[in-house]
Length: 150
View 1 (spheres, helix red, strand yellow):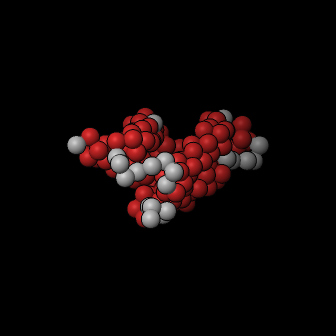
View 2: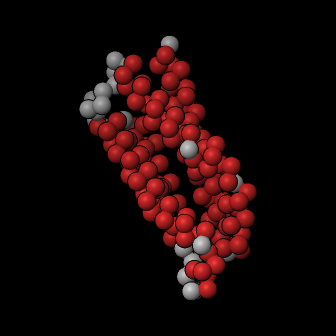
C-alpha cells in the first residue's frame, strides 16, 4: 500500500516538475522570439508563483518519494543503472540550476547595467533552460525504460 501511495506522489510531482518547467520554458522562449527581453520579464513576473509552487516542492517530492520507494520495494535497488543514472542527472540538473542558473538570474535582476553595457544574459538564461529540460526528459526516459534492470 505504501509503495502505491509513494508512486502516486512520485508521478504527480514529476508531472508538475517536468510539465511545469517545460511550460514555463516554452512560454519564455516564445515571448523572447516575439517581443524580446521586456516580454520575457513580463512572463517571468506572471509565472513567479510557479517557482514557489512547482520549482521548489516538486523536485523534493520526486526525489524524496523515489528514494523511499527504493527502500519499501523489494524490486528496486540503488545499484540498478536506471536509479543511479537518474540520481546523477537530477544532481547535474540541480548543480547547474543552483550555480549557473543562480548567477544568470542575478544578472537578469541587474538588467539595466547589462543593457547599458550592450550585453543581455537573457539568451544564456534561455539556453540553460533548454539544457535543464533535456536533463529532466533524460530522467523521464530512464524511469520509463529502466536500463540495467535485467
